[in-house]
Length: 263
Image (tube, rainbow, N blue to C red):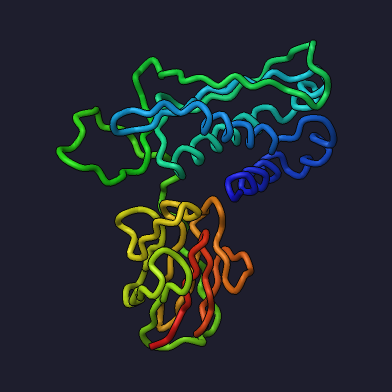
């Protein structure tokens, strides 16, 4: 899962290379991140227009594991709280307050084992974190305005792509999926792909993220860029973060396969 791999990458950078030494045995940070996502999914509270998930997580650790985390606890807490934000934003869930992760020592636990308490805790100020807007029927909600989650910030601009192999207009053709045979013209500077209703290439595939990827056009060159999706983007069965497209390339998103074609 991309959220987990991004978590590990950020954490390793945050603690400046002592990742393997700090977490050589016992409970691993990615286990805690994975548990957060599991608890969020398992303790959803479904409302009329929104789905609320836990935002406070208390991890009970064995003395040996707690001691191992002492020097990196601040960074670990910060990155785990970011996992909460990203997990909620990617699935369109809402948080009743800012994410909070804390650690406690439990003498009865053996090394490598932990417990997690997940709860919904509203901020004293009433601050809430809402999901990315979703389509709704009827009149708009009368609920108070909420701030958009940090995970939905615009992605950074891509580096300049290598020399082009594609010139002129192009298109994406669905060769496998729910709308097999459908064609999408690539005539804009940016063509968005995902489950958001505003996407130019709208996918109902459950394996696609809301904002999954973009195809960017510049000087006749077409580049596909993954937007930090949960399940990743593949071109010709190879995972990519960003890649220039050539005629005939096949893009896999979830169970959907799109073929890039020059007209």
